[in-house]
Length: 300
Ligand SMILES: [Zn+2]
View (cartoon, rainbow, N blue to C red):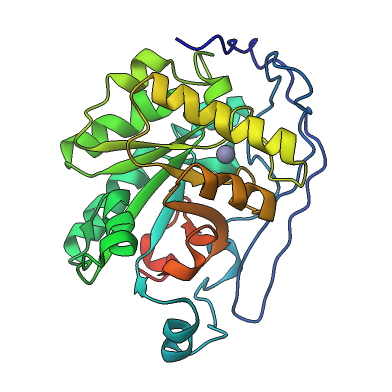
């Protein structure tokens, strides 16, 4: 096993500097920038909660349907091949009471809403596909059925295991968890490696979310450490088959993209709002953040 240390309990909930931006005029995107504790040594991350910002959910600002800046033909020519494939982004799944007590209501979807989301997708003829379907599309041109959707859950929270996984398993719905590996094994907030490894591998995939949940930056040494350490820890736990990444706080950096390419990552998600997935933008792919509102509010 690798000598990478385990983190201390994440008792420091450093709020850092949050910046939530709304872009109206049809395109809704938000970026949350924080200043997490810098990784200067190979010690342990003292990372706070993740994207707990004041950024409102898409549903609170009207229709999130983006106004494309390119026509489908132009998009295809510039970034193609492309596929229309909503990638839904969740964080916590827990009761309102638990979310209120934990101060993460803005990141929470209740189990009832998750169940309703799955029922809605089924009733509207959607197929939930795994993230590997998108990688296959990019790598091999494997077609993706119309009305497909991908489910992603960020941060490896304990409530994914206790609340979300049973609902997803009952529906045989595939999902991807983006894991900040240095924060794992910190109950009760974060899941343990054992819990994640106990999830059925035919349904659940795991992705790199850096080691300390570090926002993408420009320091090659730090970015390389963050991404390669998480890559190694996922490998060590046999959880890195998909080789996918999500930027903590959603904003990509060129340095991070170079590191991901050097490690042969297939795709990387931002939190930019959108549903067109293009190979030419494989390291800056959009997602749709959903909350406690019907999926119809998010364009599905
Ligand atoms: Zn995150």
